[in-house]
Image (cartoon, rainbow, N blue to C red; front, side, top):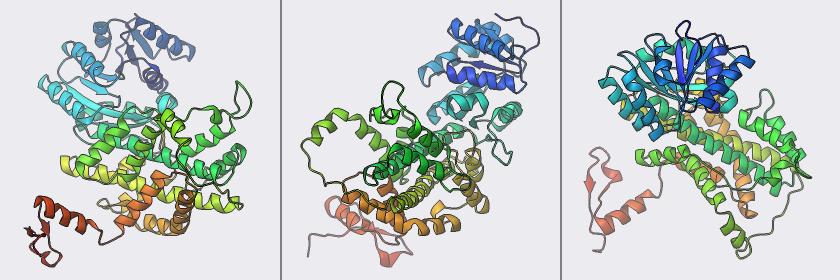
Length: 483
């Protein structure tokens, strides 16, 4: 145990990489912090890192939970960074008897928002505050400035606001990438949808890469140059994911010849938040075509052995590489940007409708603004989304914003060309095609759902509404088999 000295301003329990990095971030920004972990070795490791970085006067380590709690100034605030689910419940159970009325627990992990609301209700009965806070940015973000999405009691957020603001990433305007999201599980929910959008972003980029490599014939050096250009200052595609993709294409294999990206197995992992997003979108009745396509693409990628076997049996067209690389790069850019707009439109629509359902009173402009730095989906494009919702907080869909709508119109021809080219050559682009289907469905006043509803009424008497009786909106049933 470190010497006691003055009481620490905040505590952090859970010292895996993210926890250690966030603790050092807090100390780096001048706040005193106590840290604790179930494993004493991790406490020692964190304290040692603090010493090496000259932060040991701000960070103290504790191996006893009671001493850890007593080292904090009141009202106590403790950030948890432990694995979601039962480990969080177990940690809360151990901490609660040691806390006093007005103290606060902040869960900084990826957690299902209803679990947060359940825990908050239980904590409130004991006079404690409980917040769920999404943290995005990976290891580097946690250390030098993540995007943070805290939800729960606003008065509890105010207690730690100065710490979170100081530790958060900063947009180029200087604005902090943290804000109080809303009550209950709003913070966890917004982080969950952020991760769903992230799934969509990554899959769309992968599809652009596949088309450029397979049909465009671009090698890794050429791909790196394209992605560097897309990530250049002022480019609409400038983003963290485009930036790291360019770096990935440049990396030589340190164990053999060639480039490392070509040695990476085409099997994709996932931790579940993308699935949560898609599932809740289904429960909410919100179209999330792009995110669902991205999730399914990960599942398909994991069927590696089946795909290898099928590749020897199932026919496909002979790929005809294009000669005009400049042209395919441009239509890939258009398709990627337009598809990205649709993906974000779906995510923001889901957040908006969930907020309305739960009376969270969410500010979509602020939510978009805190994603502009620190987080995995940070991008130049988020400035446009922020502006769209600041201009119209009740905007029903990003596609009907003037800038977004005009941008998609400019990309439409190239978007359609790229998907046709991919389909003709047998290259799957499920997220791009899904985004285009979303756009084409959203822009049409009438869809073939009239036939679907008629079929439902035919076999199940599910009733339907008539187009010539909109004023009443009455549901009626017809005897379809009686001619």
